[in-house]
Image (cartoon, rainbow, N blue to C red; front, side):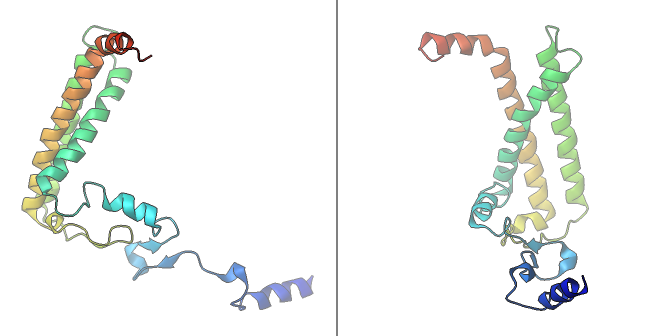
Length: 179
């Protein structure tokens, strides 16, 4: 048994042993919590992250907020429609629209409050090496919040209209031959 333990301890210092190869490395300072892993340093993940509206180059903060708001407003209506207490009534879908409006307003107020706290400049990370400079100013965050509110309301209205007119859309699809 001691022979086995001695061989294992000798292999700990062997750089040719594949068990001693590090997979996760700190990028710079470990205290920032940004580690270089095979997932976040892969070209696929970097491509996805850089193409998100928050990190895309040459996009105004208002447009960033619009894109994020439309996505959130659109997907928030359905959980409220499916799980609200009024779901089996005639106003259940309308209630989900108003609940989504309320959550969008709360989220917008929180973004504005964050902007008022003079947030620090965003740090470059492994997957996002060039964060937008607009996220380091109060005006940039306020523009983002305005776009988020408008986009969230428009996305929620679009999802509401689809839910309300679902039978019309289903009949139209059956009319043109799509099942």
